[in-house]
Length: 385
Ligand SMILES: Nc1ncnc2c1ncn2[C@@H]1O[C@H](COP(=O)(O)OP(=O)(O)O)[C@@H](O)[C@H]1O
Ligand code: SF4
Ligand SMILES: [Mg+2]
Image 1 (spheres, rainbow, N blue to C red):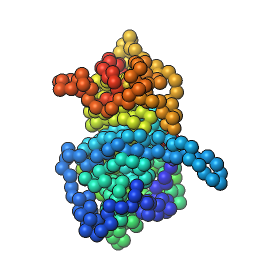
Image 2: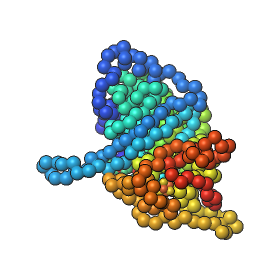
Image 3: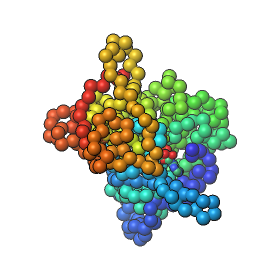
Image 4: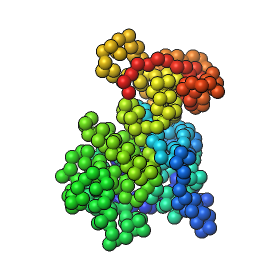
């Protein structure tokens, strides 16, 4: 887990090698044009991030002295989606399906194996130099665990203000203290806490510190990787409400990753469901929650507890059998087929593409959204998410 406010983390982020080959932006004029494109505002509702066939394979090696690659963990294996300016795109899926790896690729903290991530038309997997630095200022991250993600030896003032070391143009030295106090106020913390240490705060307050740090450089996009999963349920709502307020106030776009379907529904405009390195289904929150067409989404939703005994009556719970297969050796064809109750021969032979199913195309139904299933169809699932 990356540690916010940790000096070597800052160095790593400042110097990290850009994704893929260090080419494309070699001449100053090209770099100027890329920076200009990155600094240009995008209108609300237009795509700000376009992810295309993104792939991340981690090599599996054997041997101590002479390391030999014997395979690869296919953590992310052809993920595509758009993020529109001002929206929240939720990403849900079981642990290990590749959510955090997607987050790190969007943050350019990991080098993509293949694919593109266009931010305002610039493929950030191929940028370097000033253009990459500008991207990193505009795309920030909020991490999961507020207990381990803040450096215990730094004051909150230093933690929140640390991004200014890399981007002094945002807050000149003499103005930093005032700016940090302003950020504390924005996230609902007393500006007088500036000299306190992380252990003097509760979990929810620490996550507010993480959010303040994420806001420090006036970003346009915040990638939130399970930002409330480690918090008590009562505190989760407060932090989610704060994030919604900040989104309006600062015109932010969020990618909000979580495994809790109810929280994702609460905050998201659109939702993508991930399974074993791929997106199974993506659509608006009501398309996904009220009209799911992918068997995996239907199974996930059917597992959400329903508190109302009347609603619970007659409810069909889809129990998935078998374990999630290893991403080092995913099933052929549809990756979900080893656990899918609808699987047929075709499912082992052909990879289902993420697209609006033929049978729903052009129809005025909420089932007409992208689903990667050969036999996509609606199913009544009673759930409380
Ligand atoms: N640095 C790494 N080296 C090797 N495998 C990794 C690395 N990071 C993640 N993985 C593997 O990639 C898969 C996806 O992990 P991750 O993106 O963390 O999933 P999630 O966030 O959905 O739980 C897992 O099988 C995980 O073990
Ligand atoms: S393609 Fe086949 S195995 Fe995959 S989800 Fe659809 S029915 Fe199930
Ligand atoms: Mg994760």
